[in-house]
Length: 165
View 1 (cartoon, rainbow, N blue to C red):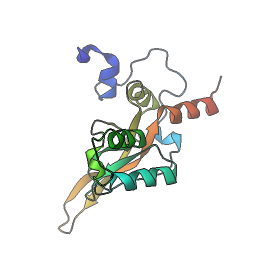
View 2: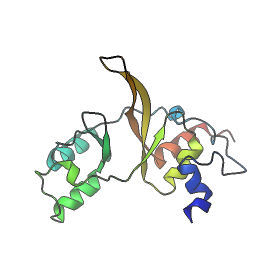
View 3: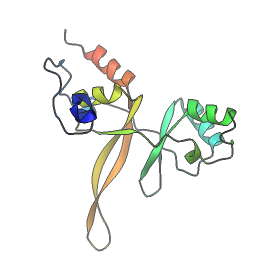
View 4: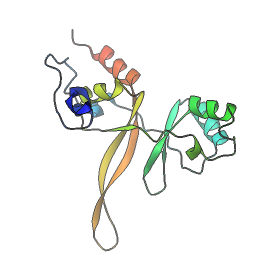
């Protein structure tokens, strides 16, 4: 059962520490990775335009976020091209037809250890930051803002550049 799996429990926020002998970077925060701001696509962008934007900007993937701020999923260059070439989507279709709606989120304040557990199963995680917003009548609500996308390569690069051994 996944409830008996420590890595699943940590990934989903039910456990804090899994490893007994943690590496030096394990408890550091995700914000230490100094990620650059992510390219964000709106859901009405066509598959053709998404491919052009990703290639032009040098990205492999980008979050798809509604104007309301709701994170709808991730679009990847390879999945978009594969879907169009296989005939499952047209170049003119909106990218919502080819997005991954199963994705992991991680906060800037979460540990690199938690990120490491997520990246064991996922190719990327969307880095989010919770922000309190107020509307006209003074009531407030928390809104998740996409801060970036993190991959195993980002973590590996950080660890190798800062290795204290």
